[in-house]
Length: 134
Image (cartoon, rainbow, N blue to C red; front, side):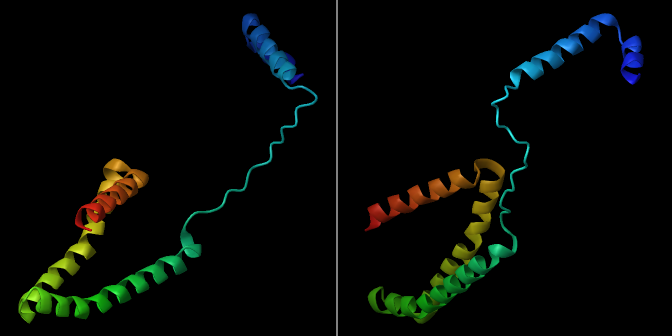
């Protein structure tokens, strides 16, 4: 009954188009078509699962950085004949730069390049520096 009322309200040429579209959709679905409308459950990214890895990475990185400072001070004083104040100032600025530059890298990655391009460029520059200086 409702379909008859709808057909009365819709002009005839539109009704024919709607019926043709329905027939085409039914013909496109073959009886051998195995398409299930089951939503795919995707794995959630980030969150609590990744937190232990991030915390462990930061803890080990800071341990390595603080362990490097006394050895680097001794190296600068012995081989480069720097005073303790000059060596400590140099290491302070080096530490400040290594702690601040990731913020600039994150800004560039999020705003302009994207994370994969930024990581790729960082790897290429790191490789070039390693080749040039070693």
